[in-house]
Amino acid sequence: MSDQVSTIAMADTAKPSGVRWKIFLLMLFLISINYIDRASLSVAMPVIAKEFDIDPAMQGLILSSFFWTYALMQVPGGMLADRFKPRIVIALATLFWGFFQALAALSTSWMLLLLTRLGLGASEAPIYPAGGKLNAIWMTQTERGRGATLLDGGAPLGAALGSIVIAWLMAAFSSWRVAFVVAGVGTMLCGLWAWYYIRNAPREHPSVNEAEARYLEEAHAIEDAATPPSSGASGMAYFRFRSVWCMCLGWMFFNTTFYGLLTWMPTYLFKVHGFDIKALGGASFIIFFAGFVGELVGGWIGDGWRARGGAPNTVFRTLFGIAAIMATVSIFLVAYVTNAVVVVVLLSTTLFFLRWCGMYWAIPSALAGRGKSGFLGGCMNLGGNIAGITTPLIVGFIVQATGSYFLALMYFAAAGIALLICSTLIDYSRKLPV
Image (cartoon, rainbow, N blue to C red; front, side, top):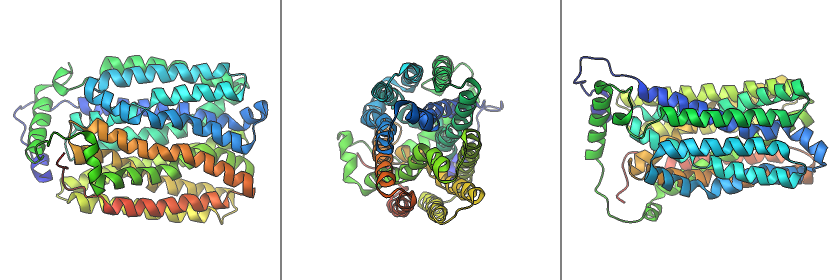
């Protein structure tokens, strides 16, 4: 089937417009802003903890609080994207999370800060399921790996930029509050941009030419011909299938390591390796930017392999397997290395390979098709953000109880092994008869 899609003849002599790629570059930018806003608290936490006198366990609680509402709203966010289409959901989500990011600057206690994080989490929740829905609508089967990694590549890129931008703003203005306001107002402006440019279907976009519209329609027609007819069952019927459980669990184990590094790595480098705020921003940028580069490389390899006729199970199991093994080995070695430069290199290697798993965002449309891809993407991200809730808390308690980050790093390594197992058990080759 992938060969059929990749060799569709264009009916027009005109070259197809590339609007779908521009939309996903915009989504890359939006997700980057999303993660700048998330990472801002992690970068500022050493300063905020001192100002509000917060111990490590309470820091873990505050860092975790974002994920309580973020996880809770994943499935409703996906259902909203399925019902009302992605454009309005993405635009409103971006406007509201920018508001809560700026509002955090007014916090006078850890409790008020926690409440703004709850609002931020609820507002950001629909962006990924809606982005997964866009991937199903705007991309063909041999383009969704790149679509997924452009969508998800905003996570490491935003974390990288967030670390260095927020650290620079804090140093320049001697205020974490100013940094939060700048990030929040910028985000709200991006929400208006999203409404202006994104459309719910190729034919609705004024910049899409006939060649691109027909290319996508013909590719989707071939895909739909191989999709089993709907049984009329509810979305919960998907959970009769092992692949759906493994998708959700695999994304949870992936996020265990990624969110663990996102929330605790700045404090780890600060406490264990003596990084000051400027060095911390630079090191975090290098580490997370390596993840961004790795994510794009993984998507390019995956789609190229698929276009050359690679079977979905062979492609995805191989690439996810390499990603899990390399990330596990690298994070394991971090626990035994004392040289700060080598630690940064190993953490960069961890994220370079781990972020290949951004291609997980191609799985909902592979299993469910375009009609229910928002719902299934929300379910997957709910699983992933259970890790977002638990990991900061677990790491906080481990550090407080042991006075060391060693067991936390072993926890991340164990999650890498579990990611390998789950990714291997998914059947990527067929849509589920639901």
